[in-house]
Length: 121
Image (tube, rainbow, N blue to C red):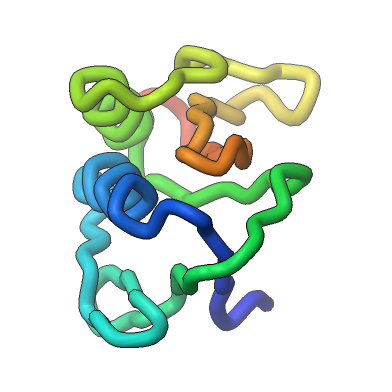
């Protein structure tokens, strides 16, 4: 089980804006503002950004509670001018209910928003 993730960025302002926009529909908010900026949902604090030299060869995913939340996160990204890599879609080659959308953060990293649940609509 992953406890937390910390990423380096060379543009903290743009990266904070990106994750604030995209993660809000998942219930995430910025909770720590210091040398490390931390995000979490509810009582968690599990995602951190620090100044530094980023690695673009990173792919990570945030789990959404519904397909609608995946759509909302990707739409929040698009509406706020962030780069969409792939629109939300079913990815049956992973499993029949794998529904994910992909964005690129300001450092070029692939950020996935995924729901593993069947469609309830």
